[in-house]
Image: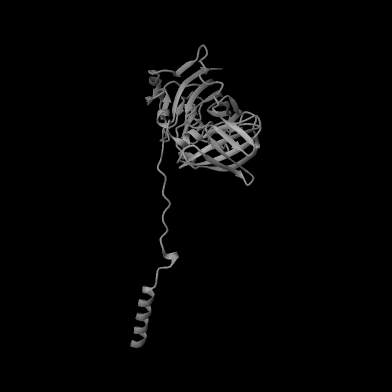
Length: 329
């Protein structure tokens, strides 16, 4: 008996002396990227990735280059042009790009389709594409006669509960987390927003806000540049309708929503008709007379009463400007 115990102890000691096997070695946890959230263009002048990200086009193709941080990019190629400007959305081809130094980026979309980006020019196979900066045709739209101006200049923040000025190098803008003091029924509205530069963030953590109509129905605001265009992405009616086309521009460009809204109708306290909306994102129709079956998550309950606008706060430094509303019948 004692001999067996001794042998057992010797065996345990021998095992303890053996080298640790690979499966017992604790793997290093991947380093979490630092959160970057910049909304001032003056702070991005020297950012090499910011200079590369964006849209490139010629008369046959459009390419979107999405920054992922640390010199890495997603790439999406469309036949015919860019989304909303001739692109065959079904033709989209995905690829990757990596910055080798300050100026040179290597692009690979498929085995036989590679190229580079340098000095605002993309070469892709035998094609040459120039970097473009698109602007909404309704950018800077002036309020029509009779419109209620909710934000146009410093001082207009007083039109909002929680309204504050965000002072940046290129102007003074309206913050997020605000609701308009005035409520509205049916209307036509215009709002301009700018998404921050957040290359290390993903999904709902990247430039997240939202425009709530009557504080009930959310038209999502998100850095969805280069993504599929779902109902929880920019231009989507949150959880209800995805946009007809993803018209999200690159971060740090001003974008527009133009909205035609008809509220839900009630009789004897019961809803008899859904609310409706037609919405243009950067001048392109993304929702055509859609219905709201109910309020969106986070919105106040549907009712016959008018409701305010809300610019949602998700902790990202989105800013707004040029907001006006024309009430309709």
